[in-house]
Length: 192
Image 1 (cartoon, rainbow, N blue to C red):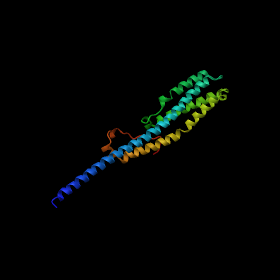
Image 2: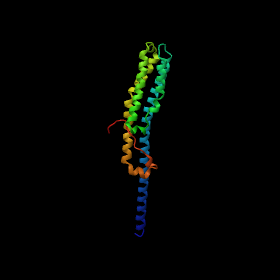
Image 3: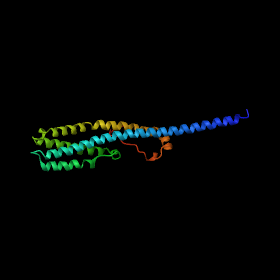
Image 4: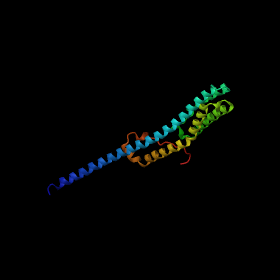
C-alpha cells in the first residue's frame, strides 16, 4: 500500500493528460469543421459567380455577333456594349450584399442589359437566322433563370456557417487563431 499515493497520482496525471488531449482534439476538430463549412460556402459563391460571369461573357459575345449582322443598329449596340462592360462595377460582393439595395441595383442593371440585347435582336429580322445568336440568347436566359437556385444554395451554406460560428463560439474563440476576424455573412433572402 505504500505505492498507493504514487499510483493514484499517476492516474490523476493520466486523466488530466487525456482531458488536455481530448480538449486539443476537440478544438482541432471544431476548427477543421469550420474550414470545411467555410469551403462549402466558398464553393457555392464561386459557382454562382462563374455562372454570372458566363452570362456576362455571352452578352458581350452576342453584342459583337449582332454588330456583324446586316440591319443591326451600330450606335445602339455600341451603347449596349458599354453598358454590359460596366456590369461588373455594379456586382455585389459577400460584404457589400449586406445592403440589399446593392443586390437590387445589380439585378436591375443586368435585367436591363438582357432586355436591351433582346430588343436589338427583335429589331433586326436577320438576327434570329443565325444559330449562334439563338444559342447565345438561350444560354443567357438559362443562366439568368438559374440565379435564384444559386442564391438559395449559397444561402443554405451561409446558414450553416453562421450557425456553426454561433453554436461553437466559445470553443472557436479558444482554439481558432483569428476567430475575431471571422465575419457572419449575409444571405440573399430578405427574411430570416
